[in-house]
Length: 66
Length: 191
Image (tube, rainbow over all chains, first blue to last red; front, top):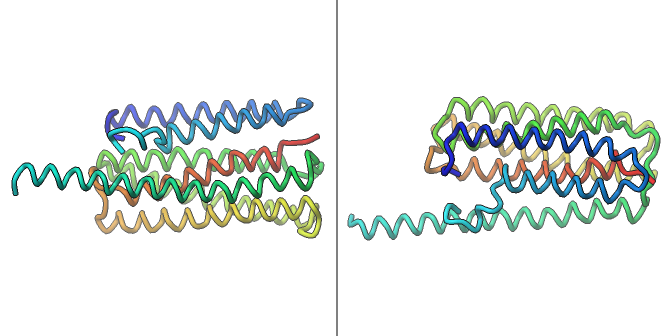
């Protein structure tokens, strides 16, 4: 958690939210397609992965920092 | 106290912190099974059917609110990790406010849903169960974050000791991850 400077970490938070917003727009658009379930699932998995990795620091569980 | 003892104490503290983190992740994993079962029941019971009356705009608004709250929660944790208490207080209160706004939105959703698909209909059962269980998690998250806020106001936590903040914020992010799957399941999927 402390490896990056506070400003760099805060910037990463905004970038993650931006990516999540773009993915939500894509999700909303994809829902209009026929047989959208696989695409919706894929977008949801990517969004969840971004939150787990960048907001929840999941991979840090296996690092020295944990 | 010798440097060797200090080093051993430091290592023990790191290990204890690691145990707390693993425990929290195991709790989150157990919660994942609950939401996975509820979400899969939607497809098992109703297939890809989605009533026309589902309020997609409200579902999108709820998603935006919860995603924004994840950023404020992240900013609060990051700020406390660096000992920046003013940014922490601003963002933890922002997260609580967004959580309450989300709950108001769910209340509005329920008022609409009672009219269009009451709880004794198939889709109504799924909607009320999924949003109800999730809203209860949001409510408990708001309570946890408020307790963290009160503890921080009394001087708890600092740059090297912010486990309470980290635990509360991680739980909040999990609530967001659960919604990431609930949103398309209830509001977007259709045959």
